[in-house]
Length: 364
Image 1: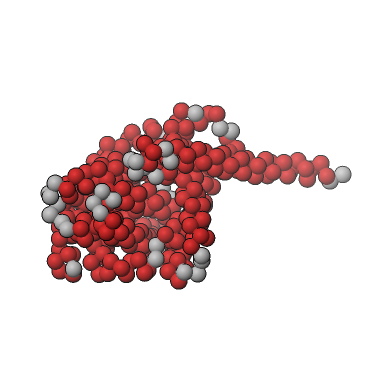
Image 2 (image 1 turned 60 degrees about the vertical axis):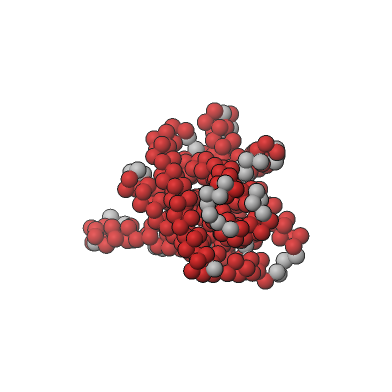
């Protein structure tokens, strides 16, 4: 007697779960295709990682063919762009070790800290005050330039809980200026315009180029030693993702708390409470995996396999963000976000050279 109502009640839930799983599977298959595309020599040679190819391909699909995807799959796409993203960012810590960071010593650490802090401050200020961007777009653009390109944009997007199109604009800046750096820096170095030795080139390349792949691509045109130093400095910048996210989390939550305090009893009467500080657990996970990698708990083969899976998970997250992105939203702030990226690019070259020279002479 009671079986019919139970079956009827369970059907929507089962349908929702099936739709979410189908959406996740769709994103995974899409990401697998993106990974194959990114491996094509012509694309790999441009320093375009699967993450970047993923958000571009996802955006093309999301804007041109989104009607072909069942509405029930949207939950799976959203899961990939949010929860899977946080897990993947945590596992990104397996790419960094404290021993590697120690190899470049105080100069490498000072280079990374100065570049990251100055770029974040200048990018946020220029984006909000000069270009009149909203806070999230300015922060995402600054993070992509300051820390580790698309991976930093993903981490900040998760902390800020911002709209997908804002991440897409930030990644666009990473693609354009990071790719330009990969080709321009070696030319400037070989022409003698940078006035840097091999160690200085490693510090400068690793400290100012956006993506890890772009750093390796640029520095490999100088020497193996420069590539080694540049890679470690770059990974030191990646390491700074954790403290930066914690500070940004506190800053982002400061305004709501002030607003709630100003409202006083009137705000409480409407049931509005100050938002609690959200500690990004994935950042803590990132730090934990850095420690695990530093202690060599896992076999190298296991670490390599996990890194491959992590790259695929990040590609899935980027692809999902692309699918959720709408070109019409990008048009509204696109030129201003790109101009902010250009301001940061000029700073990374000019200011980055100044920081590199100072670090070498004072701490080298």
